[in-house]
Length: 231
Image (cartoon, rainbow, N blue to C red):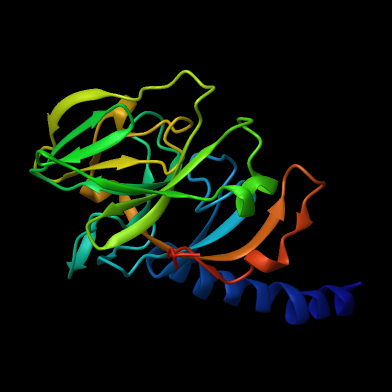
């Protein structure tokens, strides 16, 4: 029995312990991944996507905490970030639409930043219909937000918050919204997110599994960039 236990420790338990000791701090402070269970970021991110999170995009944190060791940047308008929800602490994936000091407003689905309405260009929804099941007639548009063009989705058949009055984002906080504007619980409901609660930036889909079709892999979305390419 003892030789078996010794072999088990040497060949399995010890290597696993080393992997955990090295990998856990790296995942906590350097690079991570986030499973997306909802469609609040459609069509950019769909249910079942596993997105890569760059935790060094803006700063370096003490592993397993939100305390900063160093900071070399801040989220920009248009960035996709992973953050902790101010409501229940769950990790969320949302887009930055308002920076500290910005005045944000929405008028009938049109985002207004610092008094200037954001421009939109209608986009064909046909290539995305396979993964859109929330509404029979989804409306897609390219939102020209700063230098970060991206798709947003409107669901006309849903009851949603399509307008809200002008709001100035406090210092040290960020106004976040989902790209599926009528199907996202975001800063319209829980307010702006503190800078320290932003985990990192999401840039790629590592892998994707179709939650509506028995978790079949979506191989075309593997290593897919979240940056809109105009297609």
